[in-house]
Length: 257
Image 1 (cartoon, one colour):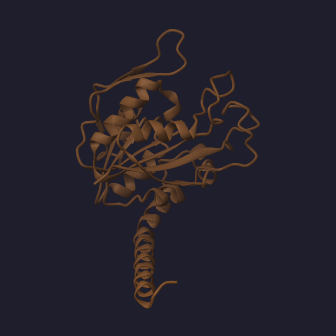
Image 2 (cartoon, rainbow, N blue to C red):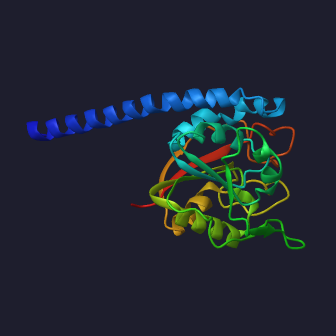
Image 3 (tube, rainbow, N blue to C red):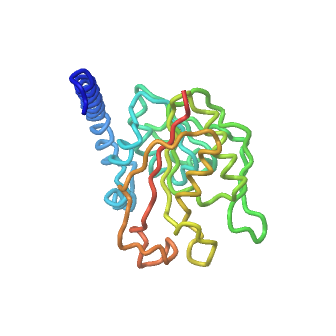
């Protein structure tokens, strides 16, 4: 049985944790308001807006611990679905870098009003597929960022071969400050399932965790935000039966202090 002193210590610890959680929730309210405003921006297309319900950007970024005063690196930003939300929120107090395959954004979105502060970095990086290869190789020495608070990438981990993933994990680790967050979302593959014609855009979450830990990261948490019970993990992401409703893992890592 616990004595009174132990009980008191536990009570104090629980109160401190509760207070910390409440403070974090209060701090995110301002960020949430900015995200909601960005979601209504004219810069977003109707197709992008339709994906909000499925992608749950506010809840996802809240889980990762995103704040408006952070230095953030978004990897493989694609057409800028998340960039259009991150950039306006970070514009005043934070900083947003985009890296790896960011040429499309540099030539388009980043020339538009409201996105001038976004910085394209690691321009020397190269990525591509060799003839017959299913996944991309990646060559990059660093992200050109030092002391970042967060590195994010959404549904991209599966695109790279094993050496490419190792490089991406390592340069992300190097770019982050001690205590910084590495945050990833990707489509779920059955554990230990080999490649087949229906899982090329899926990835084993357990393997991802092992690979990212090998780069020096500490696995901190996961979320069921994008868990989909009716995705049987049998079909390719683009199939009509699962498109827009794939089961995705949502993982949060931290660089040790």
